[in-house]
Length: 179
Image (cartoon, rainbow, N blue to C red; front, side, top):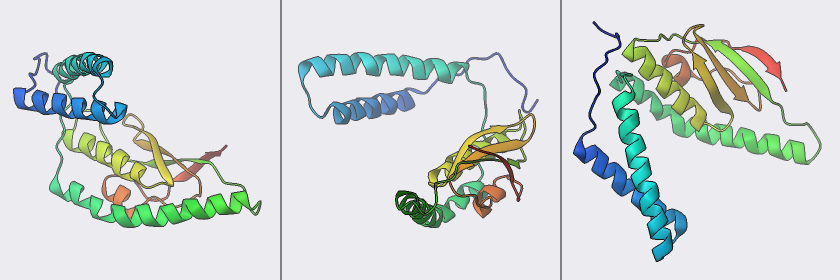
């Protein structure tokens, strides 16, 4: 039965766990910027704890994603969105610093096609959150699958991007509130 929860515990593959541990250890070395004995002891304990937590989460999480190439390809728009919204944020900052216009703060809501158990809709929800939040003016607060709505924040009110619409957002988006 598609989308039904199962009680089976999944096992994480040894190669995925090994690569994750190597990545975490490398990130620790970069974080502390050195190989001092005390830092490596603390780092080893942190990596072990993180690996155990990763294994626990992987075994207990039953969410399935059905990521389609069509949805991943939507990322081609990201460089333009990042550049144009970086300019928007810079413009907002300069106007605010010059006392011309204070920066806005808009919490917005738009419809979003989603569901609780459909792996395709779950994957689109994940991609929409990640891709939309990469652009500096739009931060997705969350997508509610029960009400089929997406809550996001913008410093300058703008429309829902074409990329986010392709992943399930409905155009329009209403202004929920200004803070």
